[in-house]
Length: 200
Image (cartoon, rainbow, N blue to C red; front, side):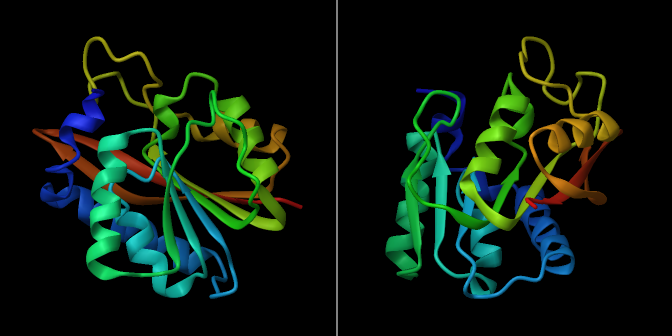
């Protein structure tokens, strides 16, 4: 089992994760003209906190993750609340084929820094979106490696200018950033941004 599989059951018990998802959702609502005709994909959904915060403002939602443990929690939530417009999907875009569906909005939270080839993933995102569709990425600003600590092999956050350039290279336009949250660990503060871009 992966680290995320083993941590899935208690994931939502950490208050800051719930607060972070709410803050990201609030900024998406402010920046994107959401409506209930929009099909959405959350990539790296974890336990679905962000999608559950947005579901009343969007149409059918697909919650995708590569962690069976996280998706088991999502499916438990869906069974309890029976929101028929939401579905869970096991998906790893670094190795799996693209889904057949297309979406008007794709959003992801604290996932990109775990992916080695961000450029390739951004291109996948572009192919999954309809023309005019919105991409929303919440992740860490560049940090010194202390957020995850020794042994972490992903990205230590992102420089906003460099990430914006990657997003534009992947075919997006109208790239903008907001600081939406701060993760506090001891005396350390880690800002979280929301990037919003659009597929022309």
